[in-house]
Length: 404
Image (cartoon, rainbow, N blue to C red; front, side):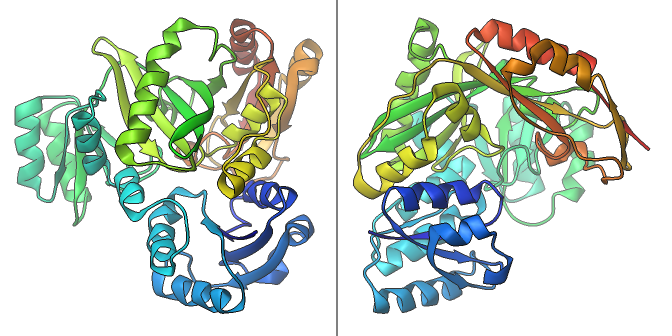
C-alpha cells in the first residue's frame, strides 16, 4: 500500500507516524518543507521516497507533487496529523481522488463557528458562539450573551490567539489588535476542562482515551508560576461518569462525518453540565499519544496506521497505568541557569518516571504561551490515577527551573 504522509519531520514526533505506517507495511512517501538531507537517519529509514515543497499548505504546489506521484504509482491514502495542514490536505486529497477525510469534515473541524452550529443541531451541547467580521458584530454578541467571552481566530489550534474578555472595557481595548477577518466569539464556559481522543474506523470508535487539564488551558498558557499538567486516566472503561462523554463523542463523530481518522475533542464540565468545545480530525499534540502508549502497553502509532491503511484494529489498550506530563516553567525569561529538586524527585518516584526533558544551562528559555513542552517537563505513570496526580503535584512543588 502506498501512503503519502505530509510533513514527516516536524514536529519531531511526526516520525512516529511514519514509523507506524512503515511497520504496518506501507510504502511511505513523505512530502515536506525540509530538504531531504535534513531528515534524521531513522526517518529516512521509514520513508520509501521523499519530495520537498516550499509549503505544504500551498495547495497548488502540493497538488502538482501529488499528481506527479500518481503518474508513477497508485496512491492509496494521503494522511496528515498537524492541525494547520488538515484543510489544505483535504482539498488536495479530494481533488486528486484519494480516499480520506473529506473537505466538509475538515472544514467543520477547522471553522469553530460552523462546527458548533452543526454540533448544536445534532444535540451536542456547546457554548453559544458566532463568527464576527466586524467590531459591531462582536459588540452585538456581547450585548446579547454577556461576559466573560472568548475571542479566537476560527481556525486556531489550542490556546493560540485566544483572548478572554470580562467586560466591555477589556473588549474595546482588544478590538483594535484583532486585525481584519472573521473572529470566533463565544461565551466563556465555566468548569473543569478535559479532552476525549479516539481512533475512529468507518465512523466507529475503535480506541478512546480521556485526559484532564490542571488548570484549564487558558490559565495554564497565561500564568508563569503554574506548573500545568494534563493527565490521561486509566478509568475510561470503569468509571460510569465518563459514559456521557463517550456518548457525546459518538454524536460528534457522526455529525461531523468523521470516518477513519484520529480525533481530538475538548470538553468542559461545570454548572451548565457537559459541553463540548474544540473538535479536530487529527491526533492531539504535545506528546499526548506517547502518554497513551506508555499507559496502555501498546503501539498507538502502529494502531493508527492499521486503522487508516486497512480499517482494522489489532491491539487492545491495557488501561494498566494513568499517565501524565507536568510542564516546568523557568522563573523568568532569559537562559536556563540550573534546576533545584530534581534529585529529590528521582529519589522518590524514579520507577514511575517515563522520561523527562531538562534543557542544559545556557539554553534560551521559551515564553509561557509556547506550551507544555516548550521548556522543561517530566512525564510519569502510575497504576492509580489519584496517586499519579499526587506525584505530579509533588514535582510541581519541588522542582524549580532557575533562569538568568
